[in-house]
Length: 119
Image (tube, rainbow, N blue to C red):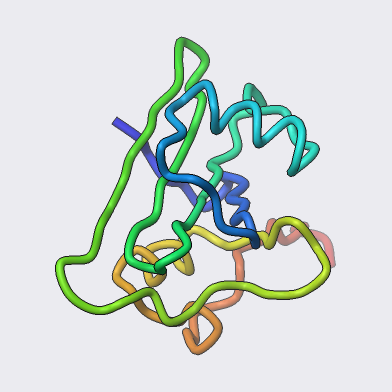
């Protein structure tokens, strides 16, 4: 099972991909196009051209996980744009994206950080 934690690095590919790609094809896209190591433990998120489906690729130390979601109606309205090849998302933003929402409009508590006791 893919476990999404707040510490996980989640990278969304800005450009669309050919959804005929499986694990090996997506791992190659991670290396050649995104310039990232698919074995790094990051969760990579990809979208098809019609904006109706997404694929998530993750390596858990033993092997790859590949998950796909295709909407039965409608399209993914939000997708990052710009000159970068990837956009980083937080775990709670990915949950919104998976529900076909817009993660840029989510208001969440700030990320937790350690506070030193002597300040």
